[in-house]
Image (cartoon, rainbow, N blue to C red; front, side, top):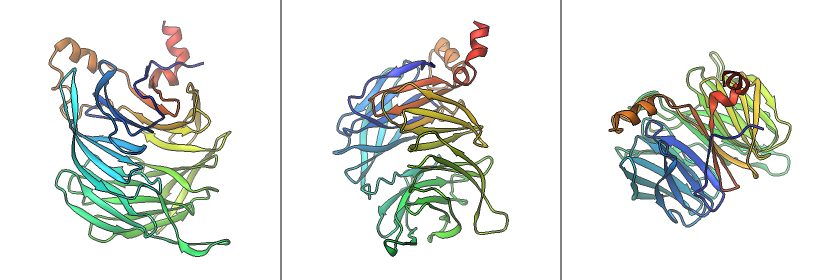
Length: 354
């Protein structure tokens, strides 16, 4: 059985979200009790904590740059935090709090260009686009009418979002939306209005729970409460998506899907991480946790946000530059496991070298 390289044990409740940021120097996590923790990845220790950051469970978190943390809670609040950190200590300070619609479980989405998107009214299909640096804000209509045998014509609730920005000015900004009806749509949101560019019925038998986008290959990945994982590509000269690949899990229930270069990772309710190639060919399953998985992130292994300049000690800098590529996995068992990606994918090769 594969074992993680490290396990973070600072949470006392289910961990609902994890995210690397600050050039991989930090990992931020949020839990079911509303607590927010930033971890020092060099020392594998807690750097800063905002106890009761939210009055209810934290749904999702992210970090932008090396000094900004964003969290969304079931208390219908989206909070922007400023991180003040040295190599060994840090503090989180609340900068602003926004009222959003979190009761639909739809998580906010972000891009590295400082733009975030979130629902303000799931029933009406209203979303907001916000630049956390400039405070520029736009209201978007991403509503959809669907027909079901039991309900007839009704509003189709957005379930998950993925923001795509090609540059800092967001000239190519678009938003992917997965719906309760299993429809997937892509909107052009670079201007004031949200214009639907593409739409497809994904074929999931349950509402879409999570989606992600591979910007290099222009592929969209979706997962659901069912056991299906789908991959789509924009149709040439059309307003639809072409289905590229499909994979089926042994057990139903996927909390989150993420794509990282040539890897696709699915956090399963069956306690396992399911790893695939970008074409959804199975690679391996990682079963370590004792409860359903909730979130996955992977370090970028690129120098961003002045990460190297923030390390003053030369020996520490050399050790940081030779670091492994990490995958962080959050679970409802209160733990976050940390995996060396290369060793996880090629365990026998490393055994032979040893």
